[in-house]
Image (cartoon, rainbow, N blue to C red; front, side, top):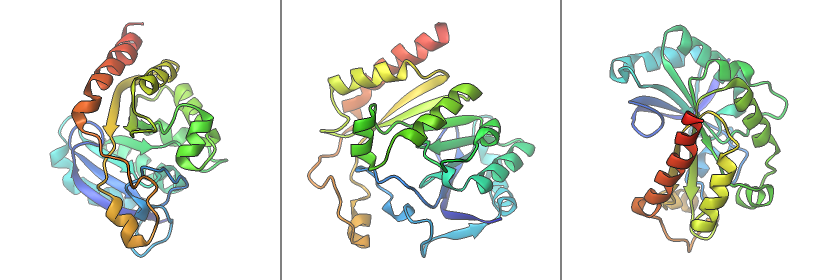
Length: 246
């Protein structure tokens, strides 16, 4: 069995705790308006690297001295859940050798696949919340929210620790009214350890130009980190602290 991998980052600092090797898997069914990696959408492309789970684990073990007590391996994308057999075996092998595992996902994988075993070998899920209602979710991603909701329910059942990620886009997910809506939504998700509000940026626009794809947010400004800092602190206080003391 071989996985289709877009790229591997050896010293990731923002994709989970500690220093991490980030494995960017190829393929994604969503077409998020703010996506900055359109080159990961197609399952097959000229950039795809093919590796077996064993080859991947052998490669990432070279970086193990940098992981320390907190670091490890994060599977990102694209959407890693679209290659579940590879992901399941890779996570299992990593756990066998004692490496911390993290899954960075929008929760939209294969419709009929049972992800229980994958979550059993996942120490942490970085869950990307695209939008807070079914209507807004479809407008943002072009897809139904059904697969995400199924995965979210499994996360709750498994009790997997979760870090929430949410991109703040002017006109779509930005502002006090939206933050209140997000806050109410997150209160129903257990096991949240952290909330990360990610400022919208335009660093991937050149990829659309290179690929000849229309960029849907052409006239939307980038957001500075300090613009979302107070909202992020508030959500971490109201969601994370309340869950830990409740």
